[in-house]
Amino acid sequence: MRRMFLPVLMVSAIIAVSCGSAITPSTLTPSVPVSPTRTPTSAPAHTAISTATPTSILTSAATPTPIPQPEAIVATEALNVRSGPGVNYDKLRQVKEGEKLKIIGRTEASDWLKIVTSDGQEGWVAAKFVTVNTNLGRVVVAQAPPTPTPVPATPTPTLPLEARPEPGYWAPDFTLSDLYGNQVSLSNFRGKVVVLNIWTTWCKPCVEEMPNFQSFHQDYANAGITVIAINRKEEPGTVSNLVQQYGLTFTVLLDTSGQVSNTYQPDQKKTLPTTFFIDKAGIIREKRIGGPIGKQELIDKSCDLCN
Image 1 (cartoon, rainbow, N blue to C red):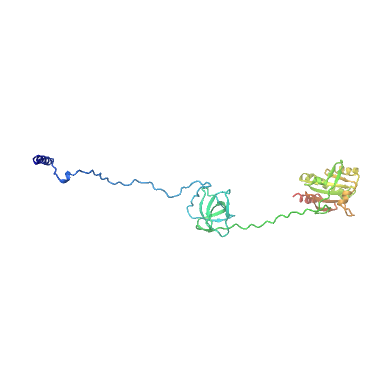
Image 2: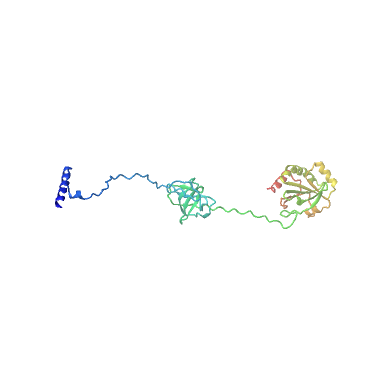
């Protein structure tokens, strides 16, 4: 047995020598594969992520565009703070005098500013109501709008309680016939200024002022002014002759009984002519006794009641 093993060992040694390698204990140990060593390389370059907030078009729920630097606002009118950038949003409060504010954003169009009030409440204000100043720092005292001077209310005119032929009272209503037999009532002219004249054909001042009434009527009939001449207790023919003679086209009424004339001239003297200026509501505003009355006076006193 020993003789067979020795030749084999010698043959192996000879083969090793002939191959130029020495036999060591390590050569008899099975080899373990070793992973090849890799040379480390640099990490791939990455694009730096910007921390800046991109600008976007604001909607009702969008985040306001950040302002580039601190800004301050000074209110020039009433400064209403709303829940969003628009007048349709709820009104949260109103800036008070002496309150400090700061701007934290704005819409892209810069028409609305987002602010923080002194108590930490955020809201929106219209930019047109503030003055932006970048030199005052982030906080500034907002100026409250000036208190408007109260305008006194126009007093409601007190209406008269009764009809009486005097200024400040309702003009007594009546119904009389004209030269053509038509029934005419004073109340039919409500809403117009009425110049009511009481006269007769035998009254010289009455006749002298008739051309003035006619000229005034022609110029102002379309301006809402009506002339009514009540003849006192004369025959229709007598009155008609004078009307034709002077070419009178305004309303002429016949008070043949004298009842209406007595109502407007209750005193015993009954001075002729007498003219009443009645406003659109039917209230006597002025009473003129005597004549003749000129056209300019008719214009001044009547047109004042048209306003």
